[in-house]
Image (cartoon, rainbow, N blue to C red; front, top):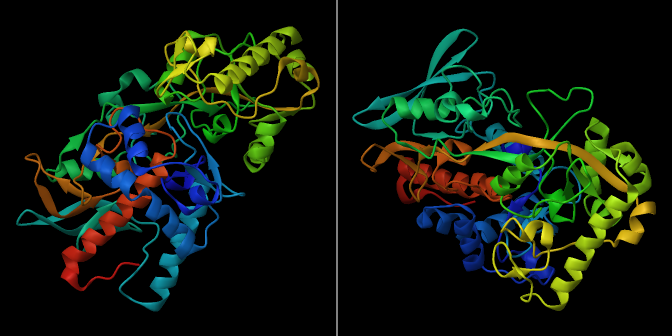
Length: 450
């Protein structure tokens, strides 16, 4: 899943934030994450406390571009970092792979084994001592402590899958996960006594991209939440807004199910210009369409131009009132405060952050990038329970020697809902925590941080 992350990686008090004069703190980020669904303060402390240093580490050590910021749903400040080109997950993953490849060329202590499948974990006196893996029809053994980074189970629709066991109500939905995402690591961990947690919490993302040529495809590409962060609006079949585009993902999805499809994600010129690489990429894939004018868009949708004009005018006026009187609105806002935005305010989760707005009079001649969207299985918050050192724990809550987990295979970090931008952060932060803890387990205090 790391390579598929499209919106960015969160970080508080980063070099990029400081350069852009963004006011943010670890405490504020921690509060947002707990309010967003997380239930384990000790893990959130590790996640958010390491966010700034670890994002800066990616910039310093790998020369990655993390110069752009967006505010995603549930965040009180713009803290989701991405570069000017490519998806951030792809950028980070490739940089890490290239570094491992360079290290493996210099030392036999780092080896890469491709086209192999781990089958079981080896145990000795209660400790994990290695793995058995299959390659070309033969079994091999690799000895040493193990870090599981096998992802979730959001693409396993078989009868005996974790999805069928814990969330059978979601089996009818498409997924953004690759077909390799079948919960293998979780099952291997459970088989040797590791405790799992929160497996019932599966995130349904509101903006899976519908391909017009294959609308029923089971695997769909994801429209990055950053598209809404830069000002994209979500509208129903009638051309009307019905939710806070920057609310929690489970909330936006829930409001979509109450409204009438097809749902569209629309970006005006200013919004699309801010995230143009994404728009061009989606357009090239055939899952987003460019309209020269709003009038052209309305004709394609089969709605009156006046409807889309009214939708934008209401949004524009709410934004201006919010700017003038941030706490005087009649509706409760998310994550806190008050709002003037009626469509979202009526849901109890009002919109308070507005970006790249246009008034209704501009819609007729305004160019738009537009995608048809649908809810999709996206992320498994549950997995193998870990402690603050990323060690897997047994049924009694005690760390299992020699077994660590990082990324989506690990559970308990996000609680019942993950905020956008926290998955990449989870992978990087707990990946580093697990790596350091595992190295110390093998070598004692002789390890040196990179």
